[in-house]
Length: 272
Ligand code: GLU
Image (cartoon, rainbow, N blue to C red; front, side, top):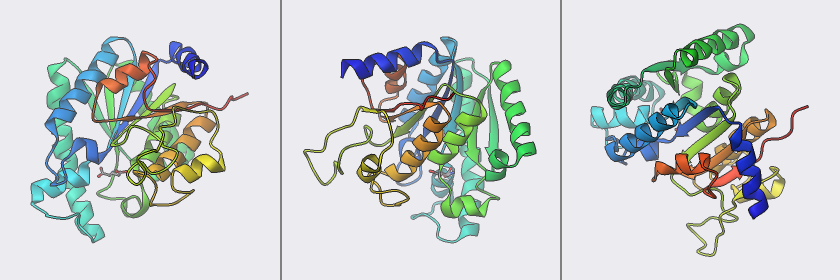
């Protein structure tokens, strides 16, 4: 195990640009209202990492959730236009809160709402890359989400785990951290099996690892693990290590960068 920790530590030594993705269940309560405690903890930690000299990029979910809260919807909207409307309302609420709390720590934030094409179409990809570079050069913390109000495909099938891996590629990040509602990847579903063991280090994403996540492409993975494995594949194959930690404790971000043994680490593939 020490060996794996050493590998993590060695990797972190050279990390400069960090992409952090945080999920709806960390940012909002099940009624859609914002979890201020989690948001404040997250922003404080991100601001501190920024003070330490890291480039920090935040990929945030929670727009639809926050929109539901504001619109007084009791359950997640079913039709696409309703989801679009909830996202349009909720995105503003999220940004208002981020702007407010990051300002308390003297940080400037900038919003970028991406669509799939911004990551796949060469010209648009380049445009997005330039925007990120300019923001980071000016010490701004970019805050990213998908443009849910207009991209219906994303609302049907998109997820911010995958988005964050594309963002990590775009900004040529050194590390991608996914903050989840679970401690990491287990060898079996911890909600069903008390003996489930947390996997601390994944050198390679094998079929066995995919099986731990509920199988490739499954939507029924352990705590939404299938999309996280997908993100890990995109990220590690681009030479960027990824780690899943529990978003319940924002200090986990710091622990990762201090080389502590938290969460599940997915080792970057060597790029020649
Ligand atoms: N973009 C969606 C939102 O802000 C979230 C997608 C996801 O949670 O993966 O509500």
